[in-house]
Length: 317
Image 1 (spheres, rainbow, N blue to C red):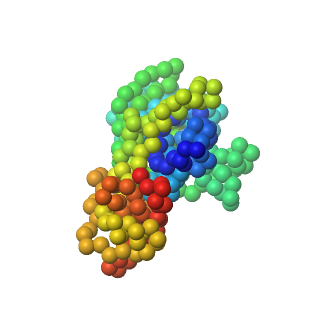
Image 2 (cartoon, helix red, strand yellow):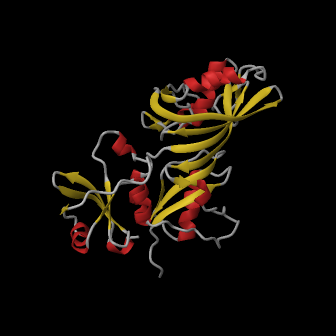
Image 3 (cartoon, rainbow, N blue to C red):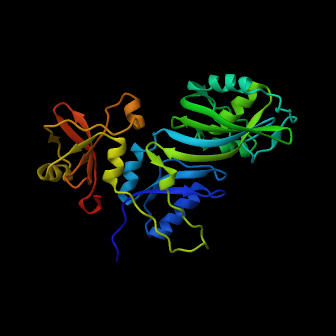
């Protein structure tokens, strides 16, 4: 019997598949039930899914709040009920082809930075314990409160005219929790022509790129596929400060004991801070052994480090 797999799997999701379909397929291919995700994509969207396998599921809480990068196509000229191409059209078609680049840029600029965004009514946000999309599809009126999000980049890279509509290609860097469909809706509303999303691809989650994502074949496409798992230590050190621990400290942490550390953690190589650090809470630190394997996640308490997550010895990688 082969040992249970542990690690992080980067997946390039194909179109017209749900994220949960991909998770179920990975469970089958890897022979384990313990698979989770750090944020889903809509079925129409493609791109990067970050999955945790085995003990990797426990690391996902430190990955879910990372910033995201998307490539999107926004169609101006009509709104839809779902803010994307799959929804019923709302109102009459408006010819948006006369809009100038300057007019578009003025409204795009207003959507950059720290903004308050009202999520789409078909989002997965829970309202009184029920998903907003479920309430909307049941015919209920759904009103969602605005949420703070950060749009670091919103750049229009191309424009095309099609049947009286104006299609805009865009690249967007944003905080976790941003709805790109809502950006398309709000841009169209600000320009007075309506808008919705017709294509979406997630190209990055924090430091992780879709170019490194594996293809997960759908059921019936074959089971002989390589799904390369990334070690927990390598993933953790990209998003968390890293503290190297010696053999005695590894043993102490393995039993849940606190440790003293003579050195300070080495900062993560990029600005990809997890949500907990941005919220003003104690910043977590990855404890790595001499081989770079993840031993534990720590928080500082006075002169000591307390483990909040301990990786079992047989799952360290």
